[in-house]
Amino acid sequence: MANSPQAKKRARQNERRFAVNKARRSRIRTYLRKVEEAIASGDQTVAAAALKEAQPELMRGVTKGVFHKNTAARKLSRLSSRVKSLGA
Image (cartoon, rainbow, N blue to C red):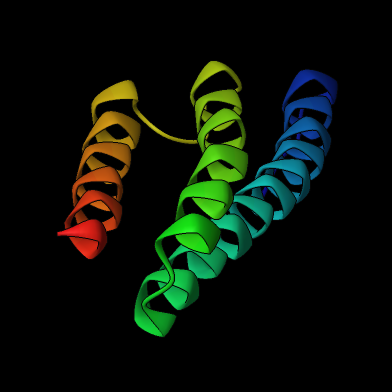
């Protein structure tokens, strides 16, 4: 339990930041899910468009500190290779 004024303020800030980060994570997951669904449908043009929309969102999550940059790079790499394999 926070007792000092500083600790109380930090607790308030943490709650706010947690809510913002949770919303960002959810938004990014939605974009990633759209790519997954497009890949499952088998349409490469739709999947490529969905990936193009998801990429800046995922990178924005990196700059905001929601994801580590290697995690984002790994996700993008795997998705892009799967989208690419649809054409073959």
